[in-house]
Length: 178
Image 1 (spheres, rainbow, N blue to C red):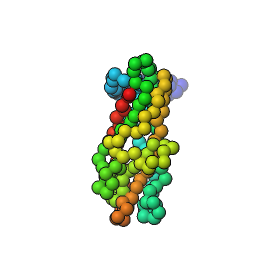
Image 2 (image 1 turned 180 degrees about the horizontal axis):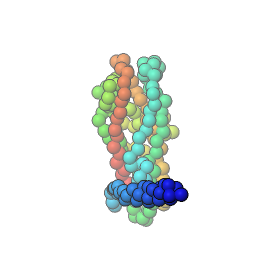
Image 3 (image 1 turned 60 degrees about the vertical axis):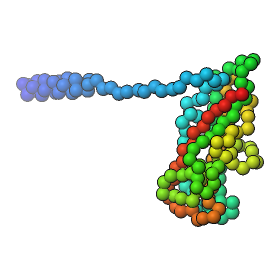
C-alpha cells in the first residue's frame, strides 16, 4: 500500500512539473510594411511582390521554331480605386529592369543559364512583347477593383545557342495614371 501511494505521489509530481515546463512563454515578430501614395488606386499586396514560375523548360523549345516558351500569365490588381471627376481615369504600366545582351527590350537573366531573356507581353495583344521602359496600352479604370493582365515567356538568343542552368530575372513596374 505504501509503495502504491509513493508511486502515485511521484507520478503526480512528474505531471505537475512537466505541465510547468510546457507553460514557457514564447514570442516572435510580425513586421508590417507599406507605402502611401497619392494615386487613384492601391496595388494589391499579392501584385506588388509576386513570382511567376516559368517552369522547367526543354532547351529544344529555345532552339527550334520561334525560340520562345509557352507564356505564363500574371496580373497586377488595383483595388480601392476612387476616381475624381477631374482625376485620372486610365492607367499604364511600365516594366523596367536589366536588359538582356541580345535583345534590349527583354529582361536579362542571372544564374547559370545563358542566351535567354524574359519577355513580358500584354495579354490578348498581337503586338509581341512589351519592351522594357515602354508604357503599356492605357487601361480604363473604374471605381473599385481593376486587373491588368500580362504574360511572360522565355526567349532564346536568335544568333546563339542557349545553355542549360537555373535562371532568374527581376522586373520592377511603375503605374502612371492619366
